[in-house]
Length: 560
Ligand code: C2E
Ligand code: CA
Ligand code: CA
Image (cartoon, rainbow, N blue to C red):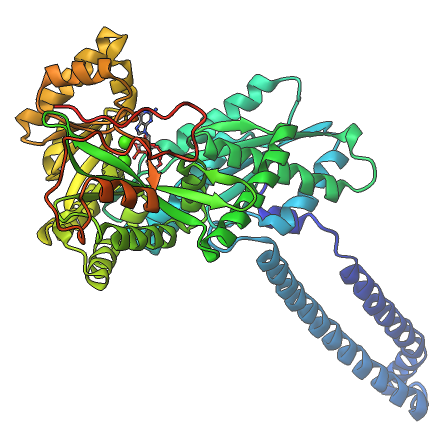
């Protein structure tokens, strides 16, 4: 395992040898002069002291004394010079170390990694593999445990990574929670690389005990390899590209669900380019107000009565047409725009819903990323106040995955919202392994069964049993249940046999935009201004159509 210090020490320092050579020359010249004058003066001085000869030539004696002084002076100068050189060398070493090392972990940094990796080829290695490691959701670790604990976790991660890597590997911290390792390898042995990546992931997944807290994190790893034969001119450039590829593979691993590794493939590069184009388009789209709320009816399955709408985001993009939230929500989450986007949409939805009959509720979907913001509840309540929308009509849908992240923080948020009368629904129930304890810990107002189970009701017995189990769980916890994805009469009939439920699905209506929703409600006498008694007897809004529809739009029917 190479560290930055070893890298720095290995470099030659010729300036020191040069200076030693000059100093040595001066010393030798002084000694030669001392020998030649001393050889003449000292014997004469000795015999003169014995009274056997006259005193030595005073010029020569003075020259000898001067020469001795010069030798002493020269010696001192030489010693000072040595000290100065040592001092400078230490300073230079320190500067190089600082420039090449990451001060927190003592690893190399990106700058020093590339030349060090290039040197691997000089030492006879034929292939190298780059592993880019990125800790998943590390920002959350910093947010919940503080930056000091975060730093400790990074250091501990480095210790663990070093233990997993082979002796001849190089490790560098690229920045934040991202690391890179260069490992000399035999590229034909893919399994060996897979094994290293798996060990890296495994070692990081083990909990860290830091400052009386247990910190859990996972890692995503990207792998790319480089053969010496393919490096023609510029080894630095090739290694830079190798790291870039491993980085792309790492992002791929993240998108596949994190806590895993991926090998670089050429198609990933073009995917990444289109992804970055999408990111800029989303940023521009927000500025141009291209994100709009669509609404889907929610129905009391027993009476067939409309109880409210779920707001579902759409992107009316100039270039791409109408884009599904499954495409842009994950990206908005990744690039930190989800809160802004969601606030804009919810504000528009409040404006729309204020025109609807006051008995109609408005459900909004909230991303787990938004729940990481400790001010989320305050922001939402402020928006309610600004828009003068009654909190009792708002229903916030959160998914099961939120519960695993930070239950205590979510509890606080949910508590503040419920205190003001906002209702909370657990969305996509059954997909995220929420435990009974988690369900008890949070006072949900309702559970929404994921549409994948509802869709399977007609065909598979297992789904039927599952839906039944969820409904009875809801009963025992005293939480009403909503079924999503009711696409046909068969599913509806099955659900109605199971108990008192609310539901939504294409059978009642696909999501439609604000104007169409308004028109639908106007026809059903369910707008505030109409002030008339609602009329559920007539079939609702056959004329309501969704501009999306490739499939024929299901007629919107009322039952019960
Ligand atoms: P979700 O909350 O589970 O929303 C229900 C999804 O099921 C919607 O897809 C809806 O159009 C679709 N759906 C409704 N009835 C049926 C049916 O009978 N059959 C089938 N096959 N599908 C049906 P959509 O609108 O594409 O939304 C997808 C997901 O995007 C939502 O799933 C939600 O998780 C997320 N989402 C939508 N809007 C927002 C938003 O404003 N913020 C956040 N954070 N997420 C949103
Ligand atoms: Ca939902
Ligand atoms: Ca759902």
